[in-house]
Length: 112
Image (cartoon, rainbow, N blue to C red; front, side, top):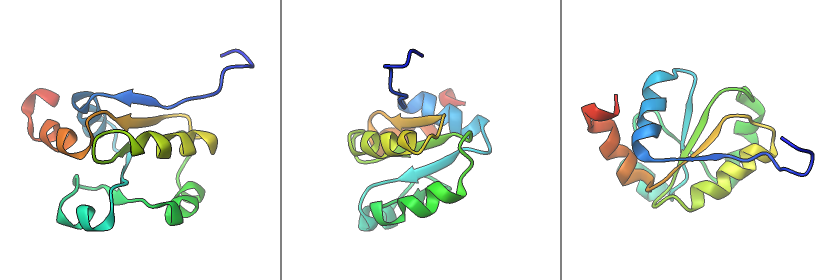
């Protein structure tokens, strides 16, 4: 990476995100939807993340462990993903398609 290139997160299709969750035990999964949506349903093992809790998580997670973030459709998760990159996390992923796509991919044996 050249000096003028800013580190970035990676966007993953839901099937690739599901594969990452299954293959990397150290991955941390965050749901950045509102609390009511999170309480109605979320990906198994996902923690709810809000701006108020971001610094607490950033301080306790290893910078090299994968961080996977999803939201409703895949837009807000990009904002949060960039925040983790800004805190020097090296493996940060935003899920394209959001919660519904990821939940479906995790149910599919094809995403194994």
